[in-house]
Length: 189
Image (cartoon, rainbow, N blue to C red):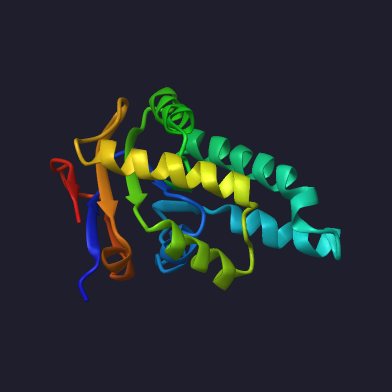
């Protein structure tokens, strides 16, 4: 299977987004380590804090994980590393706009990789990873994600150079970050 090629030339910030359980962490875990790319997934902060909090339920220290993750995103965006890859659900247009603004402030082109999955598949993905989002929160993510998927098929949102929409089958092929290529028109896979 050939991975999906994403053209990310120059200073870029790639937002990998989709509802909880869509497969963002799985996709990012498959990226090979590279000196010109920083990959930020909140799972790293969660794993670092798990031993500190021991038996404390994750929901109790989740805000700390999210704050630490967002701080790491800020630090990386202002760094000299050419390509920054950020994992966030970003089902809210406000979050996507904030990421695009951060990219602009740090002299980066914003790119969006949106993972479009059925809510039932996302729920199964959450159960598989052992971290299930509360029903009310998930329902909000799912509703916004469905509307976002439809909107993204028309092209990138304001502030983004490119958007790529992948379903679960395409995401299973993985992605190749082509950091030395020209930007191509938006597409869906």
